[in-house]
Length: 127
Image (cartoon, rainbow, N blue to C red):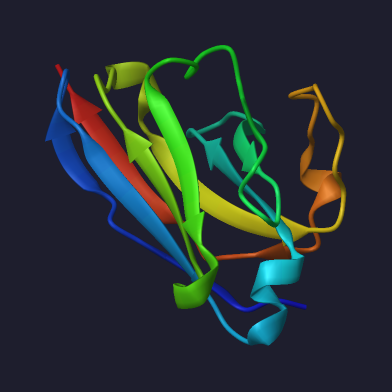
């Protein structure tokens, strides 16, 4: 399993931008499809976005489409989540995940599709 560590969270104001990073260990990083999930207090862990192992395919939850962008640099074993025009409802703990599931042309991913998880990083968006 991949070892994953998120960074980049913090407290920002509505309309601001933030970039999260997820650093993975090992040469196997480039073999894994990756995703971001988030969990707000007292809510389920929700899918945010997905990127294929090569980086050629991405998918997003409808709630973040057009505002968030996922990318990865396999040479650095790192995945990124660029978040623009942040809203208070984006407040959550953000988790990165690695797995082997890939569904072309869909954003229907769940936590069960990913076997490795980071510890999470808090993002708080104030009004």
